[in-house]
Image (cartoon, rainbow, N blue to C red; front, top):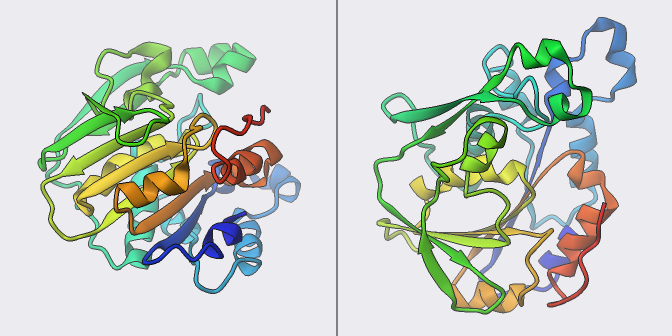
Length: 270
């Protein structure tokens, strides 16, 4: 499917693929090590089947350097914003960008987050050890807009859903799984990127405002507009596909990424 986009030969469009390991890659203990294949090998196998002009980003080694840090939630299947940051650093290396340093960036934290693992297990151990969700407040002012399937329609809004709390705290990023949204910054470097993602991309996308003058985020599970026409209308010259390793191997996710090429096509369900 990624090759299909590359073979469209949209003039001036550079394409990246970034597949994200799950936390199991770094947490599986010795008794279970033979029950999970290394994510890096699976990611490289996908990339080996992709066309040469697609820029492949494998963040496993960069993330592994920080495995003792709080990079994946304990009660949820997502990564933290810090985990997303290390993948963003891998992306910057591939894209010729300088990653923002987090040392002086202020942040806020939402406490008492109990995620997907808690919801399916109702484990008292997880309940008594809730996660927290940190999000970063970058100094460069960024205008945030929520779009629709109508090209050119953008409604001003906020990048972070400050009102969410507790079990819904991961939705602070980009207000959750919006079909399409846009961020415009004060940068004037000519770089404009579209990010096609599932929910792992929500924590990743805010970092891109430090390097791009325009960032459009599309959730392939929900967006039903004319994707290619939107890219052209917005002057997008870089396209990044970002999926966690389960999503990259799941038929309904793959079908929905392919479906972006057919406006209005029915969305596949899990």
